[in-house]
Length: 238
Image (tube, rainbow, N blue to C red):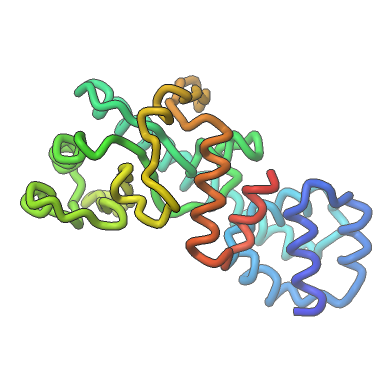
C-alpha cells in the first residue's frame, strides 16, 4: 500500500491541495487496490470528489467506475434520508422526542452534502423511557426488532436497539442514555435535547445534536472501534 494509502489519506484531508494529490498520483498507484481500500474505509465519496476535481488524475475507466460508485452511494443516501424523515415523523407525531445522529445529518454538517458519507444504517437518540413506545411504532412501520418488547419490559438493555425493515432491509438503530454504555459516563440526555440544533435536509428541518455534542459522540464511537476506518477520522477532522 506504499502508493495507495498516501493517496487515500490525502483525499480525505481538506488541507491537502489538488496539486499535492496530483503529485501523489504520478507515483505508481494500483487502482485495483485503491478502490477496494476506499470502499473498505468508507471514503469512496472522498476519492470520487477529488478525482472529479483532477480530471487527469485517473484513467478514464477508473473515473467511470468512481462515477458509478458515487451514483450508487447518492441513491442509497436518498433512500436512507427519505426513511429517516418518515421515522422522525412517526416518532414526533407520537410525542417521542428524538435526535438524529451520524448518517445524513453528519454528512451534511461535515461535508455540506447529505450523500457524501458512506453509512449503512440510521441512528436515532431518544430517552430510555420512550424505547418501548418507539419499538411499537417501529414494528408498525414495518421493522423487525432485534430486541423484543418482552425483553424491553424485562429491562434487558442491549448496546443498541437494532431494527431491520422487512420490505427494504434498511437498518435503523435506536440509542438511549442507557444503551450507549461505552461512553465514560451516563449521557446527559436531557442536556442534549436542550442544546439540540436543527439541520435542514431536503427542505425539512431535522432535530440533531449540537455540533459540540456530536463531536464528542463521534470521537467516543471511533475510539470504541479503535479507529479502524479512515472515514471516522475524516469525520472528526471535517
